[in-house]
Length: 249
Image (tube, rainbow, N blue to C red):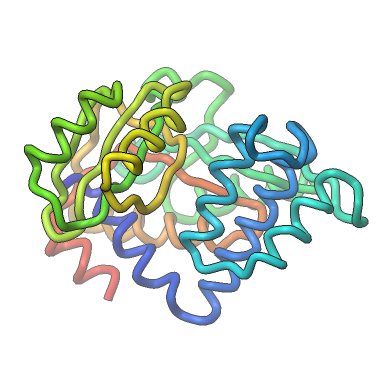
């Protein structure tokens, strides 16, 4: 399992803690609001909103909270106006980062991200400096239960591009971005239990880090993902699972 995927698992585990769950809810509410503002409040005709609602439900967010966020986006309720910005940069050891933000203050976000990168041995990059290292993909989590052959067969029939076996964590089905919802619907209709559905950025190559660089990288990930303006962080680092668990304890 890649270091980045392992980080995602540890992040989900930590999200059950009260403070982190509150952060998670805040980020999901922002995404619901922006998705509804950009594409309307009907998930049947708004792909981004469908993903946001699926994420909210996977996070056990109450339905009335989901609906309030959507209504803020459509203007039925008063809400903040958020701007989407993607910052590019490098972390310790030459790790590439894409930092997706939703913010009501561009200057604050830029300053915060630059400061956090600098604190842990990284630096901001120009637009396009690292984005070329990543491919955008749709990702669907299949919960444990079926065999790899069963998931692979159903995924291929649904039009997926790849299936990754994460052992006790289930499977990850990857799709072309435009095929995310069609593949997810087919997998669900085939009887598979699905978890998270999202668009993400998959690195074309990875950078292996250890020692002080590994410690700084995990600290940087926590700083970024704890920031209220940061929605998602995509990286290309690899490290030993045992090292990551010990550093994250």
